[in-house]
Amino acid sequence: MLRSLRMATSSAATIIFLDVDPEDRALVQERFPQAGIFEHLEDNDIIKQCAGAEVISHFITTKFGKQLITSLPALKVLCTRSVGFDHIDLDACKERGIVVCNVPDYGSHVIAEHVFALLLSTLRHVAEGEKRVESGTFDYRGLRGVTLRNKTIGILGTGRIGRRVAQIAHGFGMKILAADQCRSLELIDLLGVQYVSFDELLAQSDIISLHMPATDETFHVIDDSAFAKMKQGAILVNTARGTLIDSKALLTAVQSGKLKYALLDVLEHEHNFEENKALIKQPNVITTPHVGFYADESMRNMYLDAFQSIEQWQREESPGHLVHDWRIVCDLPKIKKS
Image (tube, rainbow, N blue to C red; front, side):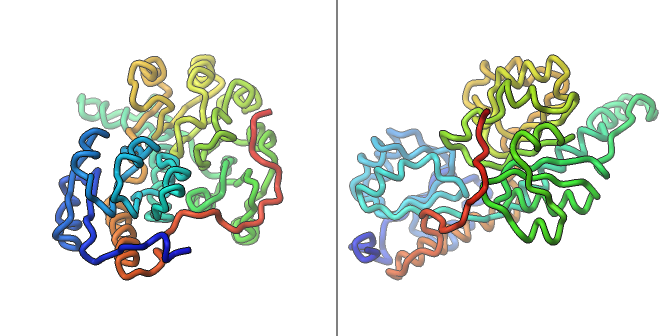
């Protein structure tokens, strides 16, 4: 099977890196001095610049749909520098025998840290305090914060990132609930995590943090019905995928006071600011531009893992990070809308 996927491999294979930030260019050039390197290209430019490319490494900002894949006749390896691969038409790749690789864990701790960066900076009024001091007022009154200790955090999805969130939450002395189709026994045994149903998690959590992939099943998993089941004044954190939350329902929940805060690193309509404007303008909605993954260590790991997959393919080995279906036992109820 592998031999048919990697036929006509060569150490001289034409390699293209897309979505490369200027500060990462030297890292790519050092490892692949002959590679083509681009910051970002639109589909027509990709077809033009990558027509002869056998290997393309890219990020989630460039979508590889069937039409684009069909337009690249030489393509043999598609290596996304991300955990998720919902921006790639896997069926189209399978039809062509294109090897698809990802980076399963370039830094789950980095995204987990961002969850708590959002929580701590918001609940302790860091931005407001800085503005007050900069304006010449050194006065704490009106900036009373909220502690994390003894609060209940509900983690929707206990994959790599969700597990890291649980570890950090445990360090803060939080009670930890989780909902997932698959249980992590280490979380139960070592951190005292309690797995509950989706509805129980919504009803009992002071803070809810989302860590699920974007699929048909998880689309708008947080909707009007889900908000209705949450505690009054709950806090919702989303560093996963914007489509997990129904934006209109979120706006209603924020405006009504059902949610005390919505802390978002992702949005449902990230490429259409007009769709998000009303939500972003809410004073209790804190938004960052999908920077949860974006740290020095994680970016370096992202490239190094991609380099490894490409070099393994060049040596006619099976890349260690092939995208495939995981063999796991998932015997719990699915997280789904009621």
